[in-house]
Image (cartoon, rainbow, N blue to C red; front, side, top):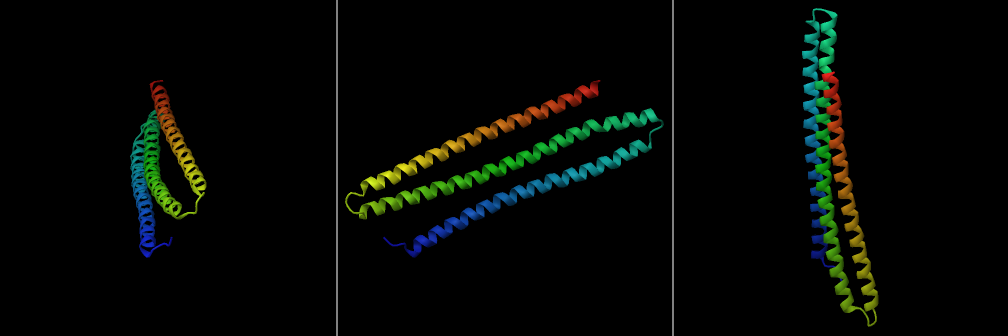
Length: 180
């Protein structure tokens, strides 16, 4: 059983494609994060200028304090929106990288099983037990990986629910403070 140049080329091509998929996913995430951050910095700068102009125009101390207090609520809401946007981009990037990894694992498993089948055809008599043991170990590994993937997805869903709940709690506290 020899490895042919075509098999090596095919394996290299699959590795390069996987690497390019990871690079594209990371670049897309970086681009989104940069856009969100640039928008947040621009918005903060514009708000700062507007707030400074409003404070300069205050006629007395009470108006000055009231203006300062009114600036807090929008700032909190913008910070929450920024954090949520950053979290969403990170979650999307993680999902894309997970897809790439899952595809590579599936391809590797398929290639390994094919190789194992070819080897078992040329193996000496009595090696069926060893081949069956290897296939069983591979199936157990795949099962463990599937379970790990399911647990990771559940943990991600729980984390997303907690982020949403925390966001609503902070917004509720801010509204209550504003009403008081």
